[in-house]
Amino acid sequence: MNNFLENFKEGLIAFWETSTEEEKNELIADILIYANANPDSFKRDVKEILFDPEVRPLPFVLEALSKDTKNWGDFYVNVLNDILEKAEQTDKPEHILTFTYEFYYTEEADGEFVQRIANRLLKALDSEKEAVRLKAICTLPGYLRNPVIKNRDLILSRLEEKLNDKSWKARYLAFQYLKFEDLLPKGRRLSFKDKILKMLFGEPGSI
View 1: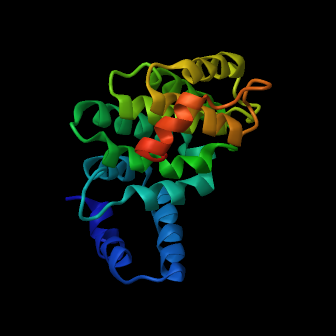
View 2: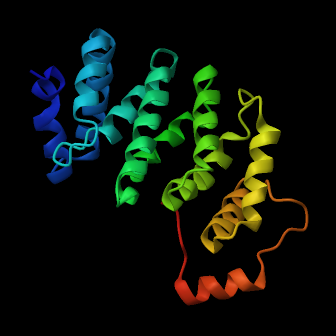
């Protein structure tokens, strides 16, 4: 029996259909209370349904646990690894990678787990799957102002390499996300070629 589902399935499904923002906030608060009261079973039960298309628990779970990253930082690291590994194994990784959106809650968090998240994303820059590489390019810059990150220069150097990647999508996204965080090399501009490709094929956007 999955105790998490027993407690929250109805509320999770209802949210996607009819719930209000107030009801969502109540649900998130209840999930955090439940997780802290039952940490072992919570981890086990959520892992069973991580990518369940009916319940879709991850957005709620990650937002709830963001209120207590001191206790749940390792959970974020493990879930990120599960997401990236799943994306590597599927023919349509884009849907799986949308589950990383809630990781923005951790960009300014304190704790060693944030460094581990950044390291995992750094590894993803070398993925054989283009979608996974692009997700890492879009996500990593947001962590680079966090003083917890000790290998900032290495990560920034790897992202700057993507400005000259063979993939125009990688070049474009690296430029846009580094620009957003004010991390572009001085004087760097988007190439004329990539401007034309963007006009022809449209904004690649974040994964």
